[in-house]
Image 1 (cartoon, rainbow, N blue to C red):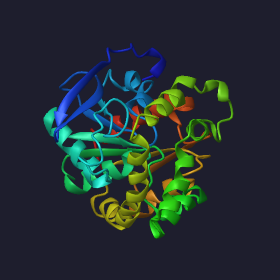
Image 2: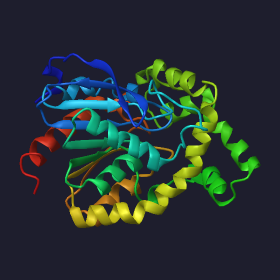
Image 3: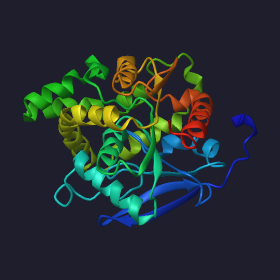
Length: 297
């Protein structure tokens, strides 16, 4: 179906109480339709899916929550909630139960990848398909842009932590959006401006620095993620911005090593591929899911 002909559905903005937190999420589509769970990354929120949701929701129930510490989901102080990817995944797992999401395809981007892959490891019977948009699970997918963070993993000193605050500035947030984009006039300024405003909330900088440190545990889990791809062979589509400064195209290609049936599409754009190629990516997702959710083999 041509996405230009899709009638825009109503998108609703809701909250749900999960794991003791108020989770903000966007939802559209019929409740009895096949579900697609959209998981955002750093430094953004479900706002990144504002263009994609209407292009899928005529056929699917689409749900996009904000992770704790991001967007409009409650962000408790670090003294009350430990910001680790295990805990983020636990909150989202509980969230899916809370809203009655028993089976779903999962779209993972950036931080959403280690969250979504944890859900797949824990509940392989619930995950019907995986769409990875610059959502990495291979060391060869990590660019040199990770070097300062990897230095912090090896030596979690106060000095190395302080050095990473440069990654939280408005200038760096904008750079993540525009790097590698051939036409910056396609980049809506409210995207990086909203992200910067939410990152600037009191205490949020240390939440993000905690997650930078804990990302090392995601890399440690890569072999388990890869084992899941190899053994379970879930329907898997990679839609990748090929000029991403953080996650290299090699990370997308690597999916086919463990899952030969994985499908990989590259787009001439950067990290936030939906900002410039949302219609192309939506078309690829619709075509992929129409085949795989009917005939997963």
